[in-house]
Image (cartoon, rainbow, N blue to C red):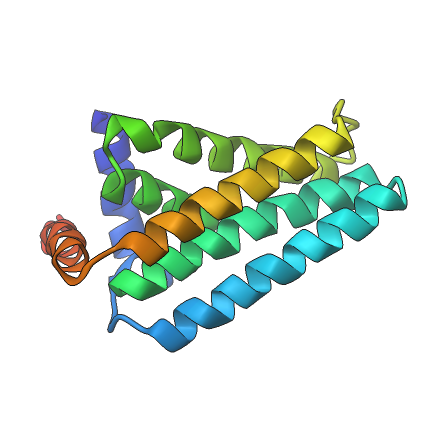
Length: 165
């Protein structure tokens, strides 16, 4: 956990790192649409047997749905690893750890196939099912947030952003 706290502090110091923003349902809806478009892209690429693009689209479907959640609570971050760390920080309850781990793994897989052209073994059917389930779970989490829960998450975010040093 100590390494995570240090990393979050680093993210706070970056120009495009973690920031408190105004909650935005419009931005949330835009990122949900991006997530759904990435899901469609994943399916098209899987059907065309283009696993590297399916893996990439899978990651972006997950990333954009997480970003929609952040938009709803009023958080902004343009560094992917920092966004993932923030997601983990805000959803620190044990019942959400699998989502954070899955998002990290998806990012790592995307980097491997996109930047290093490494072949990874991927069952495209499993990939599509896991991605759809992830998106559904985060959408349900986002939709289920009540005003008090949003206020609590914003308070947690304020505590984080006030501890930059």
